[in-house]
Image (cartoon, rainbow, N blue to C red; front, side):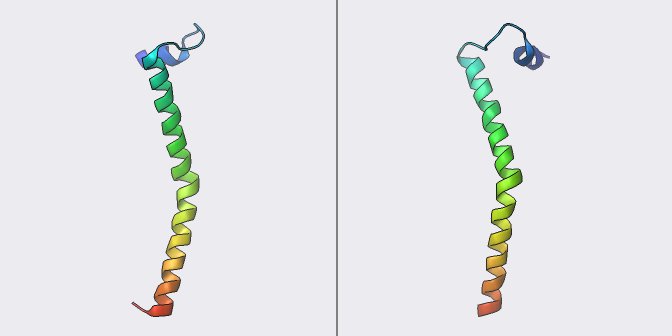
Length: 60
């Protein structure tokens, strides 16, 4: 409940150190979520394909 009133209160811009820290943590979490959903799967798929190609080339 306190988080809801903190984020959605109608008094303008959030002020204070802890408010800015909280908003920074939210933005950082959203950025990590974006990376883990969209970027990491592509990197992992490419890495797995390269590893399988090397196994085919050199054997286990």
